[in-house]
Length: 403
Image (cartoon, rainbow, N blue to C red; front, side, top):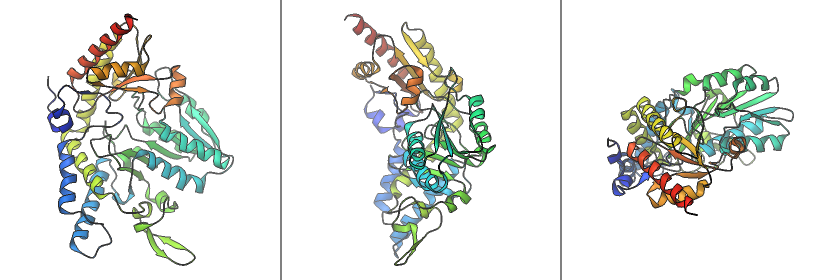
């Protein structure tokens, strides 16, 4: 069956033989997003907030409307608590730097998990090194779930931060956010969730997740690169010092001190990225029209099919939980073929997969491999992509069998 959404994506329409299976790295962009950004630049482009003329006023309105739309998409009723950033990495670094340096001291404990992307691992690791805190890594179960029993035993009176991913980018595990948050809150720790792989693939309601911070990226959810968000609790954001200085984040500048603007401007130094915010809002419209429950069920159907087809091939090992417990990611290795070689051969057949450690080296060490091959699906994927993946794998095995 042809995917009805594939025609919405110009790059895929122009490349009918392409099987794009690297959506966990970045998604393709629908025409609606590209049109929204072009419309902004052609009709409303100006520096917002600062100009006393109508065009600047329109740019300001577009930026405000985009913030409200994106906040609604991630389930944050207070749109001023959504800070636009360049993406998940900047969002997590913002928290680790601005909140962390002000609140974490020598002897405190920071807990991350072995599933985490480097962007939610290294900032906390470096914060701990800089202030003398203990840095702890929560182990995993055999199916690459966070070991909740181990986490309960690790938290204590010195635990200041528990940071974890909503969904693993490497093996697709969907983590129980509320349960993890409850464990962290039992000792009064800050709860930080990396939602880079959550927001694009399943319904998210920040206000009911019981986390303090939730970070995400636009380019993984049909939006443009260079835009993302950090949603936080108002009382924590208001108490935090700024992350960067300059532009509209300033209220008053005296010779010997300065004061800061209200939320969310306090954390958005410099000229705002209005066009990409508009594009991200259009991506939210696009995904809502499909329905995030439908996005998740579509991906899981493809993951189930791909897992079944790959598991039937001799020499293939699949990592991660069952299809019903993950997002649209299948990570695998093939005996006697390095993942980088697989990706190169697949590319000759128009099949785009990821090969490497997926910015999750701590996880790869625990899996006992240096790298995996990763196929990741999204709204424009269909059964033909799975079939192309399996055909490319058969060809790769045949090539290596000749050596």
